[in-house]
Amino acid sequence: MTTILFENPIFLEHKVPEGHPERPDRLKALNLALEHERFSPLSRQQAPQGNEDLVLLAHPEEHLRTIMSFIPEEGINSFEADTHASPASLQAALTGIGGAVAAVDAVFAGKADNAFVASRPPGHHAERNKAMGFCFFNNIAIAARHAQQRHGAERVAIVDWDVHHGNGTQDIFWDDPSVLFCSTHQMPLYPGSGAKTETGAGNIVNAPLSPDTGSDHFREAFKSRILTALDDFRPDFILISAGFDAHYRDPLAQINLVAEDFDWATGRLLDVAGKTANNRIVSLLEGGYDLQGLAESAGTHIYRLMRG
Picture 1 (cartoon, rainbow, N blue to C red):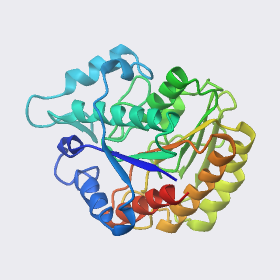
Picture 2: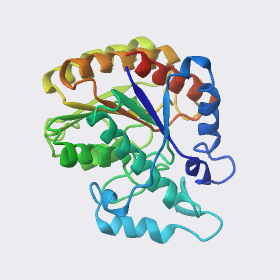
Picture 3: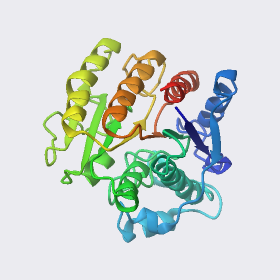
């Protein structure tokens, strides 16, 4: 397998208040893990900055202008209690989109089988008309629309294993049967959505997990609900909202996964991609707020993408 990692120093310049969990140290911890010799074959490329037109693939222009108006010239401004912007935040967010789109282009051009985008701020809580949950723009929704419009993807599957439900992605694709959205997440937990009864146009598959559950429950939910849905849908492209805050060390939730669980889940999605999607997978970093848990889990995920 050929894997490309998309990264950019601008992601470290998105500043948040002291003590905020979604901090630049997250990417610094991942970069330290990637110094291990097993990652020496990994192709690492600089994510390009995306343009404003890409934002409009998943959001109205009014949302873009609202985000732009909140970017301060200095200091930190707040959209809501936990979503903040600093002077470089818009550039960082647009570069996250650019990296996601570049990753899609790379796998459809055959330059890589799969790709991982190590970006921040994350995106899966951003609804069509609302920034929330640390997120400005929904990177994975934009990547899916780009795959459809630029590369003719007909059946895009998005698998979200962040411990917080991807309400924004669900909102954007709620009534679109060309995109399958599958999510495992803790419930009850922020943002409060993600019940099994939330099914959209039959294209939404939620697999909520109770607090204090671990590997067995996660794997069973993944097999019985998500893999079953993927088998029926037969995607020609797979996107992963790769949050690692279901790790047992994470301070923001109570699911007790270990790094090997993300290895296992990655392997199952590689199997599906090999059958129906010409191996095409693009994975985007979402949450994960314990530095050790994030580094171990994301490193394990990336290494599994490399191994196939």
